[in-house]
Length: 272
Ligand SMILES: NC(=O)c1ccc[n+]([C@@H]2O[C@H](COP(=O)([O-])OP(=O)(O)OC[C@H]3O[C@@H](n4cnc5c(N)ncnc54)[C@H](O)[C@@H]3O)[C@@H](O)[C@H]2O)c1
Image (cartoon, rainbow, N blue to C red; front, side, top):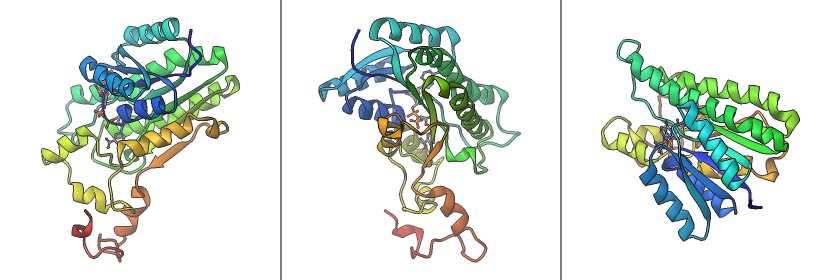
């Protein structure tokens, strides 16, 4: 068994999960890079080790109960009790309406983005409770609280926030903290691919933020790192927005007297 804190990050092969795995490893944690994509996951492990960090890859399908239980059992047996669980495995969704969204796509998004998080909490939280120590961070989205044409994705993110509040109350007596981050538009590889495919307008995403920029995966990783740290030891049950000021600004600039453009900018074209 090892003394170092063991941090499990699902979805760590890419995007926010990858940045989080690297951030936690930089802070000295032994990071479990848990993902369904072995090739990319192993590449993240290699990146972390190259910079002197500690990481191991574990294959998992968060939508599969047995796979998640195997992960929790294998981590505990091989590396020791997990002190941190970051649930970052997820899929994005294309814009859809009630008529255009297939039930298959709806159910797939819920199976990974909600049920996957539930299964991971169910597998790891009792173990953390037994050791009376742990921190879980879930990934919500600003779509949880603002209407967006993401019929399966957004309601699943609202459910994540509710789950976070319930688990924080349930697990607090055993010194297990449960929080969530609520990212705005994050410029991950997947988001860039959607921009390149013409499915997201980068200018509009920047213009709708107070800071005039998209969120970097590292911005979200820094928030998660804080929530898992001793500096946040009295914080549980919260949802931390990391959105470059999107939530307030989108209503501010769309006020009927404002015309959709921030007065601090001459036009959206000024944003690089
Ligand atoms: N990118 C954004 O703008 C944004 C904004 C808000 C919230 N989020 C949320 O952040 C989380 C991470 O998203 P991202 O943008 O980094 O995505 P991403 O696609 O870059 O990474 C997701 C990772 O999850 C893995 N994964 C997918 N299905 C899996 C499964 N069944 N089992 C195990 N691993 C699986 C993928 O292989 C990938 O490595 C998601 O919950 C997403 O909803 C993203």
